[in-house]
Image (spheres, rainbow, N blue to C red):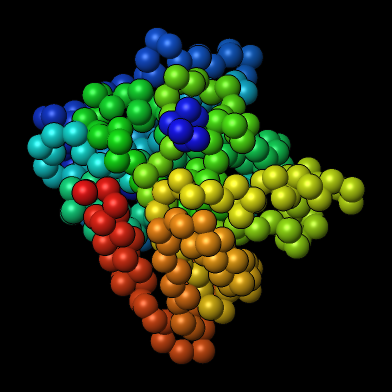
Length: 318
């Protein structure tokens, strides 16, 4: 019962009749932005992909308003939807202090996922150092609750929500997987009558144990000083592992010099010891961004995409 209580090119495509663009309005129950806090504007980076491969996209849907900031997501639709559809949520990286929902790490996976019939949502969240952790996980959890509350609008299955993320996004996805209401990360963004639980999680080079991270990043993101290292422990996925966590797929470059591969090994070991279905893939000759180092990557980035899709099929299409 623990969890039951608890890029840019504008796509020149026409949305399906069942998925016509709806103005990015939250339901009446959602908070509204304060006029005294202007909403930030961003020019997203250009995706390396042909926009047509990303399918029909509904952009900049407001999912929550927190701290006077409108938080948005993009929804990528499969070509056909015959009923309530499983959804995968992408959480971008950027050291918790940069990046956005058009991050190429996630966008390169989208064509395969929508070809398999998944809805895909890519979310933005507030950044450090202006917004210290746990703001980032509070925002991502709000996105999951928003999707559940709007299941009928998007024709999604609220019981089949998966998430994947790279680097800081991998950390946030892992926190989604292992924390419930009792952990205190739900925030006040809205839709608190909905669960922020996910049914499958994919961590790409995330830092599951924050202890030992660079001191400047610990201070700017997590507000850690010399005598408050406990904040890092309380913000680490390894701290919250229990037997009712969702299945995990963890992929890590064996030559990652940003996040030590041993961190993912530790996380995997804790998940397995708790009885959680988990798989760890150390990607040979790969760095933090899954770029080749001193040899050919194995598996390749295309094969990693297939692994994410196969894992999602296994746990979200039962």
